[in-house]
Figure 1 (cartoon, rainbow, N blue to C red):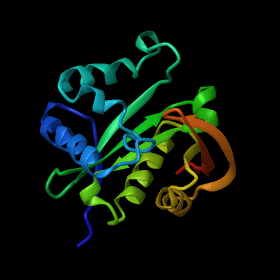
Figure 2 (cartoon, one colour):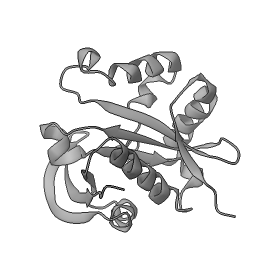
Figure 3 (tube, rainbow, N blue to C red):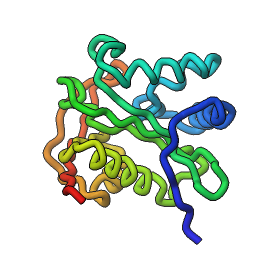
Figure 4 (cartoon, one colour):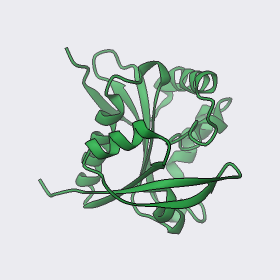
Length: 186
């Protein structure tokens, strides 16, 4: 039987799993340029998860939004059967210049021990459905040019390649592949 995934709002209920997620990523993912993709800075709050939850609330309203940031929602992706956290996705409602050029509307990550099970694709589809529900009809998603797994996931979810742009990440020159997904009303 295939695991059904759902998006849930981060809460205190998921604190232990969230910290375990950070620890596993730190042990397994050696590429610092993509290690914390889609984390909404969770890794910076490893010792103060409650503050991270409070920070996420700031991104929900214009009046509390940090300067230079955009309205965004962050969700944990969990297996419906056992409530196990398998991923994290950051959904930005609009694009500023940096996000338009490099970051895109979506950032996401799958727990290393849960990879290669199709969860990234399922999580991305859930994210796209969320965009559809809030009225966004065109979503830009990017990945580093060498991240073949991410590129395949984006393409499978309907991403149409637009171009590759040069950028900077972690003090190094990198190239981002940019894709657009068009969403139809349901």
